[in-house]
Image 1 (tube, rainbow, N blue to C red):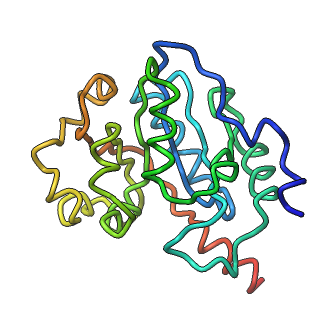
Image 2 (image 1 turned 135 degrees about the vertical axis):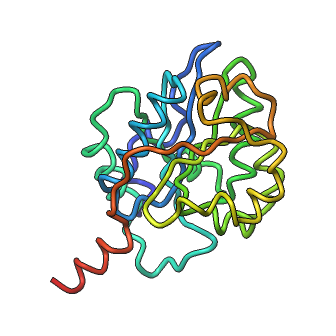
Amino acid sequence: MEEQALAHRHTIMPHVEPGMVVGLFGGSFNPPHQGHTLVAEIAIRRLGLHQLWWMVTPGNPLKSHRELAPLADRLSACEAMAEDPRIKVTAFEKALGTSYTAKTLDYIRARNSAVHFVWVMGADNLAGFHRWQHWQKIASTFPIAVIDRPGSTLAYLSSKMARTFDYARIDEEDAGVLWQKKAPAWTFIHGPRSTLSSTALRTAQKNP
């Protein structure tokens, strides 16, 4: 069974110390690619992160599972690509038995009260963020850093999330202190962008 293939380190939350600033970067990583590492590099540098957790989800409630590679394979691929030691690849959501971000963030906050967390996501996810379960609660749990992605630069202007929480947006120049802000608080970070996407890579694999 797939559960037996997971290493113990993947089933528990990464170790943190009080006072750390930790980014949470969730996704299916199906497969991981240079776009993910670029988002990670920008987030670590601009947000002043001590760690960035790549939270590899068992499944995505908004996507079909038919093309989802086994979790153990996605974890291995992520570890092979994430060279920065500050990136911690984890799938502890599997042990929680949930794929809903709101529940995961509640779990993280309850067990790490002395750690400062920032939710990190690519701008390509911003347009559909309002379809996530309890999306407004997510935005009110931890500050959010939205990292620019190709074709999504204007999403922060038109998305329901951006319009709903327009009052809580902070200037990009203050991204380094985003972790100090009480949620809801978010910023949009511009920077180098990769045109790679997991969808495009899967399509290329099926049509060599």
